[in-house]
Length: 366
Image (cartoon, rainbow, N blue to C red; front, side, top):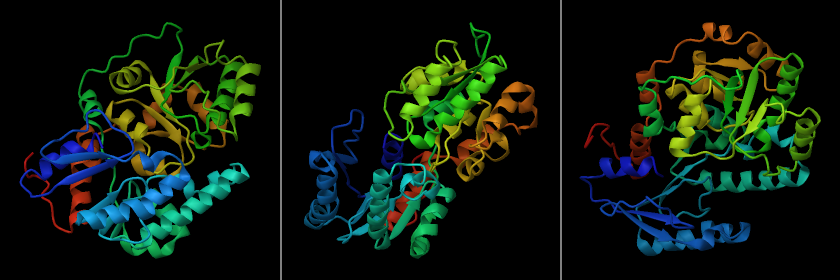
């Protein structure tokens, strides 16, 4: 919303359109008084039951009462019974990725399967279904082929702070440890594949390779399917004490950009993504990128990254062993081309075109 709303305010400046944001809690900075009205509906976020009641009863009734012309659902779920033209963004791959599900615990697999059915049921009667990547669209439509007729891909953009950072001087200070520093911008969930990186770090430590993995988590979120095994490896091999693994906790805004700029390269090992913001952020900042050889990463990065199989840590270790020579085979990023491809303005324009069923000029009120 922080990226889309400024573009909405610009693109709709000369149109008689009123935008209402329905949020579970107030969000600082989401105020555009000439465009937006924010209504807080905490009922939506209490638990799964209240979320379901909000999506399927409260929201349709509110839309009918307000005589709304269109609805954009940004969090995968849409009402089963529509009272207005609706676009839904399907943005979470975990509900549709069988590779991830087979690695998860049974209870969670069953919950995700049920949620995928509810998501698909709501999407079937939408005017259009939006996906952030072709990979995400392929994943959903493989499970629910009937959605093919209404799907469209609308990539996310690069936030302005990252776009500007890519044009500035990007000098990296020398690491006090003398190690090559690789940053993994992540939340601690099973699909982020930290276990793979720990196995790679263990091999690197045994070979005394000068590498260090910095992760934006304290690793205390306890994903049930991997937390105990991950910490067993961390403790047994003293990965934190030896400086091979550095958990720095969640980072945002200027602090996150500074962290990007201070490392040698970025790594991204996830085997399940609908998009992958850290990939385009790293590319925009001119950082070398090493990522899982998975469809979402190939779609976003193409020849601008190095790849490893997300189940074969020896492939990542081989890249570390020859670093930085390994980067010689990577095509340099064309910064202007990247920002054209991943543009929040174009994302918003395409969304409005489908939502309002009209053509929105890409150059009006720049």
